[in-house]
Image (cartoon, rainbow, N blue to C red; front, top):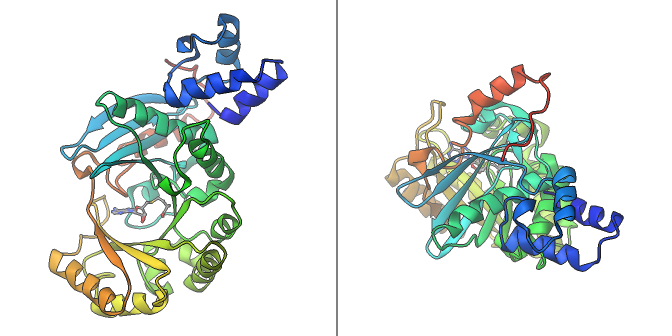
Length: 355
Ligand code: SAH
């Protein structure tokens, strides 16, 4: 559900103000899946809400659990678009990785979601609800969602308003109640989004998927570079840092023989500068249908050493849930076929809500 919409409805219907609290408590603390289960609300109001704004609008189509504790949920919107969300375990944290779009139009050559194209933007309710769906699965094993990253399917800044509205609901102490710093948005370098985030009062974290230090190489990996060359991306990042005083997390996927040479590490260091404004996360490539291979461990170590020598803080991010295609860039390995079917059926009527 969209919390703003429900609050507006309650006001329209002349419901007392405390209903808002009851609804948010039931949805984000109780993790209720249907208005029928929210017994503090009068029966007639539950029915009215169910009609106007169903509480759970994403149907869970499948749940997979990996050996390392990663949980992946396959979900489906009411009009049939596939969505995926993942919960990962890092020490005592449980990070939920959510999708901002069904599919993605940016076509990064190493990413499975990129290969499927764009289905549609998700609504704010559909984005925050992925966290609730995973929180329900985590609760079954006595765990809680502690962090959220917008790093699932899609480019968050192509769906800016819905993504930020979802972040506000997740951050709202009367909503899901996560700290703003526990929420991160990851972008492929969509400059207008970086610029808007710069002026946002909420202090969510920003991550930039860089993957190459020059336009020529980056264009072969991320065609979005043609639209927004690195000079513009880096200028937007610098303004963001000056305005917010927050550092930016740079993601750099290491592809064997493609972007992992010592020379490129030096070039990357030069691009980022040594003022400590960036932290580089080196990421292992997770196999998709593309022809790339992950860099071997010695290469990863040498690349990291080059960055360290140039004073750039870097860490190596282990991959999660590879065995269930839940790792970065592997989402939608299964969703792609569904999205193709969905596109063929585009003229079909909207299916009823399934429970
Ligand atoms: N569009 C946003 C968020 C989604 S992608 C972005 O580009 O940041 C989340 C991260 O997964 C990005 O850093 C992306 O480059 C990375 N990724 C995509 N495919 C991958 C793969 N096959 N292996 C490892 N990481 C991948």
